[in-house]
Length: 77
Image (cartoon, rainbow, N blue to C red; front, side, top):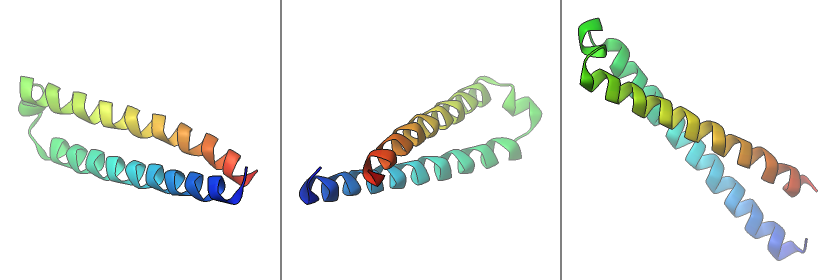
């Protein structure tokens, strides 16, 4: 990989890391909001939808983390 390619890869690896951090922060914020609600609300349709969103964000962060790890290995050479 030449220097230009390495620099560009580094830019994308950094962007992926930023995306992971944003998604995890959003997930944590939603989880805190969910946890602060009553058990009755958590079991309602709105609670189920929010929990589904939390799960999706968790899966997305995990998937991006795998991509980040793989690209970091390439970056390390």
